[in-house]
Image (tube, rainbow, N blue to C red; front, side):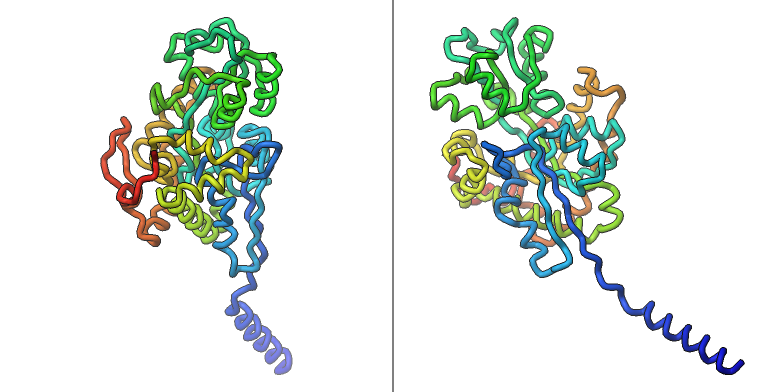
Length: 368
């Protein structure tokens, strides 16, 4: 009896001692998806905070002293729709640089994500057309054969531009093509025009297309917007890692928004296969911080509410998207405070009027 009692007591003591010792951390792979790919299928992004973070190894550096954490990037040629499929299958933890339309479609269809910081705002949209097509303005697109990448934020931006100029998708013959296929079709004369980004500038320089329109010269809110999301499952399981990832993205945003780093930023983006001069032209007379801001300010919130209304209006989703509960700013706020960046970026109200001048605007301008 005494032996049994001693064994029981010893077992209890040993069990208590083992319980007091922290379990060894299990290896974790942080899986980040990006809705796009560079020229010639290069695994690089361009033009946003995520592109700076990836090419500059900011996320990997954040975990350089933690051998149990691995960072894995996946670039989706199928853009937002393909990334959403991977999220739905449980293959990703972060959706980085996901555009407003696909992120809303995903949310409307039950994808559990949290909006943790902004990736890019006010991205310029260009209209490319074949030379001698007779298309000199948006209104001239009626009855022409055009391409549009369905399900991406480019579709939503193009639809808003068309509507502002008295047109809709019904006035033109749209075919669904990804960016690479659209450029090939345009070059082959199979379509008359397409909307896109800086990838169109190189085609213009080679005389393959003309660019009769860009959203910067029209209305800034016609541009595209993207953000960085974490899955609710990963957030609940690894909130400490989420904070480190956000810390790293904010460091990348800080680097990317600084005018003294302008050339270095363009060189990082050029890894995607586009020349630095294309980015220089795209950002001509515009500060980097105007687009590369992680803030979830009233302007960003208003844009996503507005985009959600248009998504519903255009019949791209069948029910309203709950926007306000989507935002989870606590990680961003903690990162900004820890890095003394609470007043670094300018802030804007819902109408796009500046409500606070950021410290970044005191840095030397290289915007011209």
